[in-house]
Image (tube, rainbow, N blue to C red):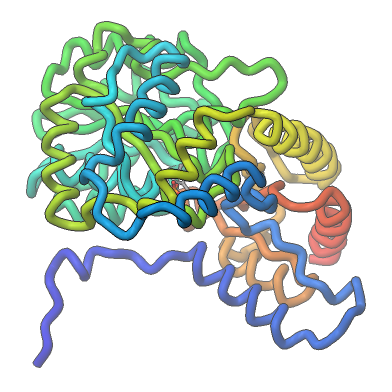
Length: 395
Ligand code: PLP
């Protein structure tokens, strides 16, 4: 009989994808123009904008040239230089030889965890966590050690970090601004984590900074490697084009860090996927070296929607919000409103009764929460929150 590997068995089914498939199926079978029957999509983890025109134009130009060949595994010199310059702009000391370009930040993160973790190792994962982390850690043969950060407002404290470290700990995953929480760690909070890690030399930090540009309300974004200069040779900083440039489908992510680790990641990528698509690389060079007007416009829209959604959710009795300062998610604790349901059941009923798609907290290791993305039209936020309030009032 066909037998799958133990690693395959450790891969959880994605709750996020399951609920978005259901929302799409409902939307597809609704043959109506009636506004009240439209599915409002708060489930999305991607911008609702299209890629800015000058970036698409660069891809068209690339197509007119010769793009049918492999590029170097780690990316073309042009993209590695552009990415290195972007890292340096944010205070990280690097050069293009220490940049690896991959097929999305997800791929960069997988590469990093694959070369840092062995069977039986432990990776510390602050919860609520982004949905793919446990599976990536398990696929690398390691154990994910979750730290519940909700009692501290979804901020990882040095005390909880210290308590979770064992002699098997090899990696700390840090995500700021966070998905699903929308919470951004301050420079001081990161520096405090760095002080703990200075005492534990075997631990490397994988810092996921995919939401780097999406911070609001005067929040300062600080890269982990900048907050903790003493750890600069132990931090892998991962970024990408998906969220701030509305380029999820282009699949471009980056990593930088110590030459030894980046070198291993390049070797790993060379035997698994090779280079990311040449056309997407050319488009990314134009994005990184070009004007930021479109990025700023999208940022302004997200900020406006963040304020709108926050205000409307605060009006729902029993929803407790962590003030969202980054990314494009609100993540209320809805314990008081579950009334015996799980968050999965709550989200399912909400989708069926009111046609509002959200992601239940179970997907992120936070079973009393609900993730709502405000990467959608302002009118949808108004309408969806009104329906959500009606649903909650009728429970
Ligand atoms: N990291 C976090 C925290 C994310 O939310 C996402 C996407 O949802 C990713 C990484 C992956 O991004 P990419 O599209 O670049 O693979």
